[in-house]
Image 1 (cartoon, rainbow, N blue to C red):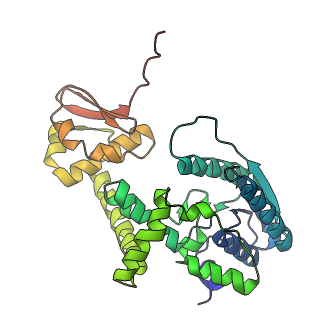
Image 2: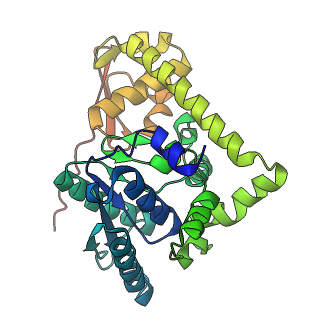
Length: 314
């Protein structure tokens, strides 16, 4: 099955519907934009480029390249320029990702359709390996979803690799931009891409496919586990501590995490690791991390958001 048919089979690029494609100018987003125009039609597709201004003249060249690409394909382009606040703390890539998705969500809402990103099967493997090293727990092995709300990843759903997007662009005569920071060993994701993944492929050339198949199997099994957790809670937002202990450690961890995430509305991976502390708490409160707090009263556990710290007195 050729690339167009494989991506069409995902159902994530419907013909005629409004669609916003996030374009960086790299091979993957260039390939995705061209496929989107092929499948949905140029009138249904618009593009968004987010310029962070992090690479000086190269950032400006990326924006110019995206403008030329969209003009060639007959697609309207919106460029958003965002700048990181001076002295801001935290991970640079995380800030850029949040800024990119926030801009994408706004553009998709205005267009009235989904936001499509160019994540590939290769990105999926790198993500799983990175999360496995940094985030203990089975969810680290699940990788990215092909669809999350209005965010879609058609190339990922079709198991398209980075090598395939490059081949598509060459055959279509579509140039792309290379971001030198993607190979910069100062960034952990770059070390995964340039060192860890090639090492696994040297062990066995089927490594990428094996990781992808494992993620798919675990995602299917995760759905079963979610049903088991729902059965244990039976619609409740709290649980007796004795009942929690009787569930056993594996299910107990999942239940604590579910309660924490329901209470906070965010991912709480650290909550599961605190099961023993919760069971030993007695009446009282315990911060579990990730903004979740366990509260036990009269032998009943409930989870809530950790209250903000009081303002400092000068």
